[in-house]
Image 1 (tube, rainbow, N blue to C red):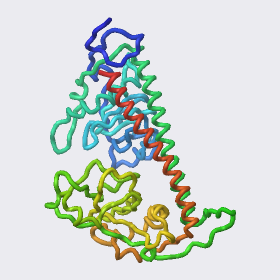
Image 2 (tube, one colour):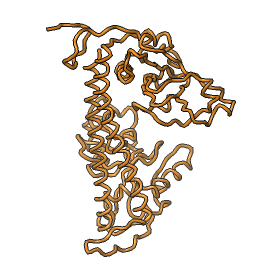
Image 3 (cartoon, rainbow, N blue to C red):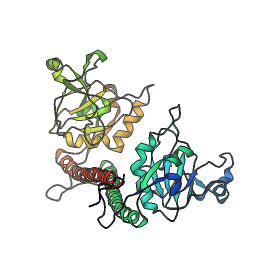
Image 4 (cartoon, rainbow, N blue to C red):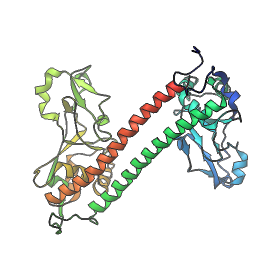
Length: 407
């Protein structure tokens, strides 16, 4: 049985022999992009794609860019043929990788590898993706980090034969296709939810009662008439400890549920002092400063949580007239969310507070229709959440594959 050092831990059994060391510059042409003169409008707004790091969003392929070039502008650049691999080498986004599906040129922040005929395009992309974090460490430490073309070209990787490259590439491409499909499904569900919510809260779409009859007309109210906004406690820096009671700050109010990977604590013996600020499952929270309007419903909290001052808790005055579940969707609807931003931006620092509650007009259906609306939208959220779980699992599996199938 072979005991080879230059071989991966995961390998298709039909292949044997060690992988060969190569510099990136030996795999193909390394092309650093450039930007046609921006003052010359004749170069721009044409049919050719011009790629900057902004266009690379952790996708295997990008198909459209906001900036395009005319034939004149394209000729001033350095053409990157379809199938090449792009690597951001300058700035805060060093290490972003993409593969162009169509011919393009890039700006000067990107180095591209255009593989020769001895190397599989898709394999080179996966290879670069796997090595991106290590290549990123080559960046010179300066105000604007940079990996120059020479350093990038000299980076050493291990490469198998072309048939093995092709086999690996085909397998990983299928994995990426599945991931892409899941992300597209999630995107479509989110778009569907947004469209349905617009119809529901503008009352273009109405539900029927259990007898198939129309519900009563929605009632016009001020937001402050149907629910109250409770602030948390304004902790000071010297209140915080290394562990103890967890404090929910605005940075934790993000995503579908609370983000609890970055938590601040206070001494657990102070619980009685702050018990009235405790957060419970089912509470509706919103960020009140900075990025206003991030709304979440607390679910499956793993430990006791205390509310910080700039986190708002919305509580219906009467849950027989306004349910928490409906309130959550009401708050994130375009009709209400837009008003949050309008009101908060009237001050030097974006803030939303109790004084703004009566400035927002809402329309409230009866509790039975609220329940139907909340159940309908919750079902969509569950499908979106299921997609997120599948994507997370597949991305973790892919990461393991890359680590095992490459050296």
